[in-house]
Length: 150
Image 1 (tube, helix red, strand yellow):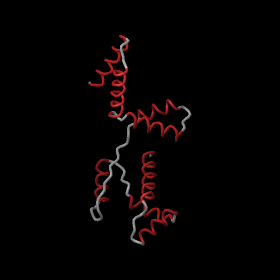
Image 2: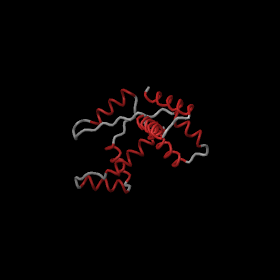
Image 3: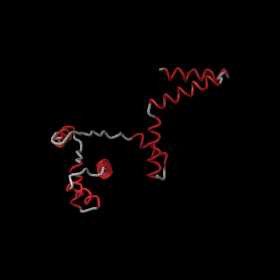
Image 4: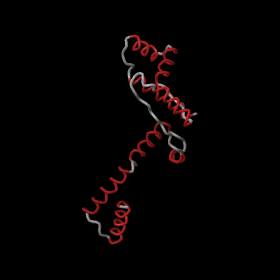
């Protein structure tokens, strides 16, 4: 309501031709606050990144589709070793008809592929050290993208 009052006020000032620098600055700050609070900047940034990466032949139609598409819901379950994260995640996924992505399963699958990542993961396991975060993030990110495409 505060924002719509500010916009009405600006229109009135414009009609009257009375928008001094102070009022203009105040208006700009209100608009910026509104855009920030409404996460419009974040949305535009994501859309612009997608546009640059995908380079569609019809960018306007592409953006409209992106805006109309429902955003996926993602649930992350974390906990210490032995907390039965996977069992809980599988139960929840089955109940709400979601796909469960297990980082542990992805790591094991990568080891079985004998890929470069798999070799690094296997080395980390043998030396009882953590797997590099970037490897885990990359594997999970790829699996999320694959799941969302299906």
